[in-house]
Figure 1 (cartoon, rainbow, N blue to C red):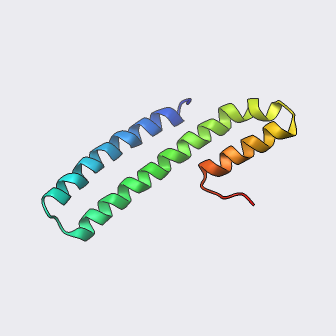
Figure 2: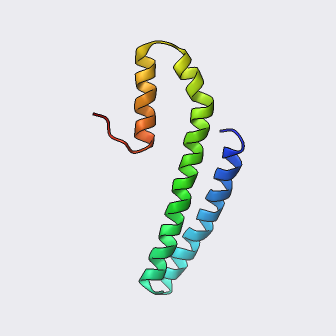
Amino acid sequence: MIDPYKSKAVTNLRKVSGQIERVLKMIEQGKYCMDIAQQVNAALGLLKKTNHYVLESHLVTCSEKKLRRGDRKSKELFAEEIMRACNVTSR
């Protein structure tokens, strides 16, 4: 990964780590379920954002090499790879 994507991803993952610890403590302490759910959703949001940084970095760096190869099969495999990473099913 390259910056700025790498530093943003690392920052988000550190935040998520702290949120997960808080969620675990909330569950152990028997906190209100909706408060726990809200924290879980916040962590999921950061994970999704982090995934976008990873994918964007991949597109900016690796895609050029893969698409330059020229052969159709390499391009199709790259497209499938991106689709899987975005949780999009193929035809």
